[in-house]
Image (cartoon, rainbow, N blue to C red; front, side, top):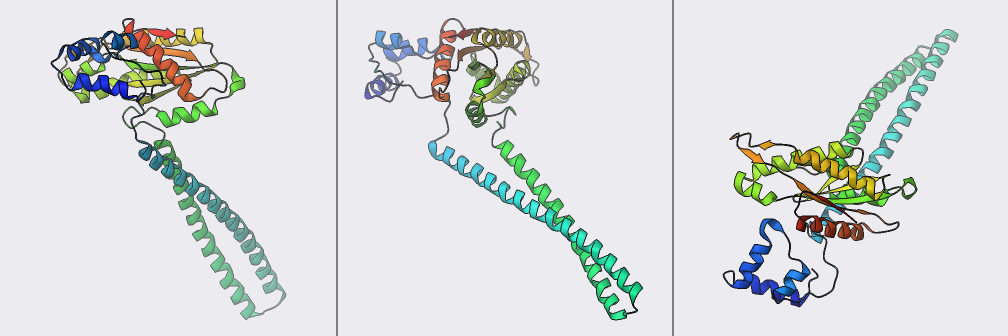
Length: 316
């Protein structure tokens, strides 16, 4: 819902009087994390104002995103400088090696042509210094290569979710922007684990984290080579390339069935967690369409799947 005063009025009426009939009715309708529909709100006496709802899962503030963007830009700039320095070092190393070889040959020729001890001594000293410079340059080049590898690792970490090890929302946004429009159709799916709050409440957040990771990794394996990212909370996004909407939805439904067939247990207590499923909304991405627009449409389809009973894929 858009940030309209009418929506805040309805929320205030619910939250300020939790024991009143309105709040109890909302609690029943939103059990297990289901969101209110427009019809639900209007039936309860609220008023819905037209407007674009904000994308869910954008939990980071704009300030945090700005800081992350600045950090990544700094890493990228540093890597460019390091790459340039590494090239300079290699060029210097090659030139020094060639110069040292030529100087050594010249020294041998001078020695053969004339017994000039002083010239020979000076030349030998220069050759020794050049060899020392070659060693130092080789060490500096190795250190530069190590730094470059660390910078690449830092860039990868900025695009990876710490908990699940999957790519994160930033990686999704970059892949969405970089997709090859000429390579065929692309589809976007938004997936959400069903009743995940119940897993956390009953078994604890540690178990919830392991379930979240297991499902995310299973989705990534079954959807490969398509991109699966943790978009936030218990929500995943899948960017599918080269498949039309019907085939992409069939692929995702196969993954859904595989996940639903798994039997999770609490490894600390050996207590079964029961069946854990996910629901999904999937849509075809229109050419030149923004990620926000496509995501919003897939998100609405996700909640259509939730409202229809969960553990299903809704395409549109």
